Amino acid sequence: MDNQKAKCRCPDRYSGDRCQTDVCLNHCLNGATCTALRGQPICSCTDRYEGLRCKRDKCNGFCYHDSKCEILNGQPSCICEGTYGGSRCLRDLCDNYCYNSGTCEVNSVSNDRKPVCHCSSPYGGERCEKNLCKDVVCYNDGVCESLDGESAQCSCKPLFSGTSCLDDLCEGICQNGGVCFDNDGAINCNCTEEYGGRYCDHAKAHPDECECKHGDCVYDKTSETKMAVCKCYFGWEGPSCEYKSCEGYCKNSGTCSKTNNKLKCSCTAEFSGNQCELKKASEELCEHLNCGLYGICVHTDGGDVVCHCNDDWDGSNCDQPIHGTADEQKSSDSSTSIAVAVPIILLVIVIIIILGIILYRRRASQYQGFQHKRMKNGGGATNVEIGNPTFLYDQTEDDDGAPDLLDTGFNLDPDKPTNFSNPMYDTLYSGGPSASSSLASLEEKKENLLLKTEDETTPLNPNDGEDGDPNDVDPENPKESSPILC
Image (spheres, rainbow, N blue to C red):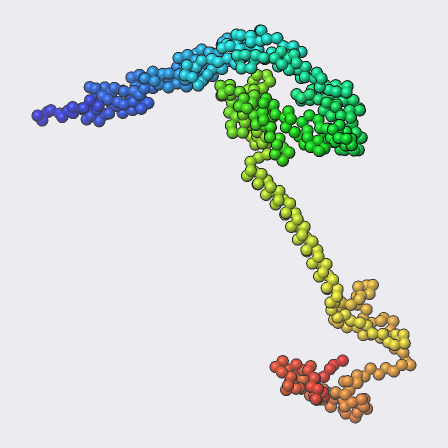
């Protein structure tokens, strides 16, 4: 027992000395389920894959011509596109199928995907093999056309009608030498100068007697007084022939209605358009087109089918708005309003600023500060002035830019008195006008001057108030007021 080693017996799914290896780990692919038998992995594949490890896709390369592959009952199956068919979409079902230039399409609505022919006139039949106009005769340049691929009739030129275009619509219509002509599918007459009206059956009046926009001014033959009236051309009505009429407006048996002088056609199920002029195409023919909510699939003159869009839409599928959506229109209107308003606001602000500057300058000129006015001696005598640079800093300057402080040519006249005494000063400090003859000494005058200077530091009038302004004058005792220096 001591010489024997332990050995592991593993379940089917695991292997290794200690059963540490899972044989199914990452073995099966593409969602397959793994089981083990005697230590070997076995894969159970999904429907689409096959092989020992479910690696191969059954649809890979199975279908042709961009067809879609799917699994049915465990086997690949193709869903063909376009005109192709067969189990693997290899065969073109429309190849040489339609005759006489017929157009082939595969009916995808049907599960069996059969080709369908759309024949051009005058052919019909399942494969456009029949000439439907073989036994139809058209006169007066009429043309035989097939209507639905099963029957045919004559399409007549203007001024003719009938099964074989034998009926002349102009016969007996125009009177008094008028010439018949076609006017957008309706009969009109080209009259002589003397006659007017749609059929030239009224004598013309003078153009000044009535104003007709789309008609002739003629005398009403039913009136005894030869009253001038307007006789409107085909498709017009009103007193002056100014309004469109419903006459001949709607095509292909459409019904016309008029609201606020605007015409509208109600078309039959086979036709569409503003005047019912467009023939609707079948759902099979229009299957490859997506005209959406704003268009309808119609036939063209060449036999093709296209989307005819409503008035406000455009594009091959009628999915492009011509004038933008409602939100885009509101945004555009808002942007336009802002673009107009901003310059106007800025202009108003600039005008207000300019007016403010003008008013400020006018008021400043009306309330200028005090300016020094020079005095002139009477009698034209020369004025002698001693200038004060501080006081006259803002006054008129001479040519050199400096204030004119003193006349440089000034000379004292020896014949005139030279007494420059100050009477006010003499009154306050020297005892009056006779101070010039006073015997007081120079020292006494200085002492009096010092005493007066000390008195200026205290209020002279106790009733001056809190400010104690020394310049205030007491009306009862003017002598005790502060001195006025000159």
